[in-house]
Length: 108
Image (cartoon, rainbow, N blue to C red; front, side, top):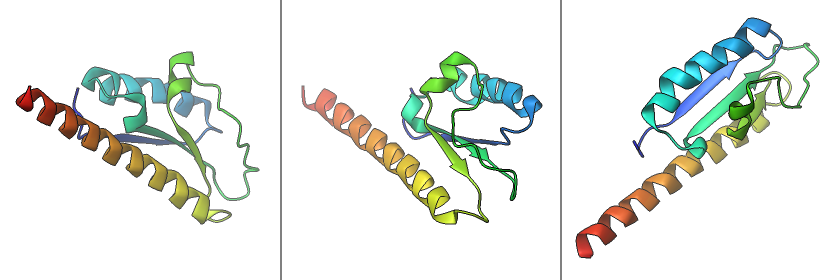
């Protein structure tokens, strides 16, 4: 596992092609690297005036485990900031846990 990595996939949930491309990106950058779900973030970016639907987009079932944040910079930039901050906190926690495991393996 590569504990220091993280992946953010930004897509437009209103475009069916993007929903299928998320699967390809997942395979190339998340699954193949052995990343944990919490090291990843799906960001469904909505264009201004698109009528944001904060529900879960129709993605492949295994992608439903990944954290999802909806973004619309014009209507709610603070929500985007908070979602990204939670993601970074998960990365920091994963790094800390990895260091602790490494230190414990040296000690024992």
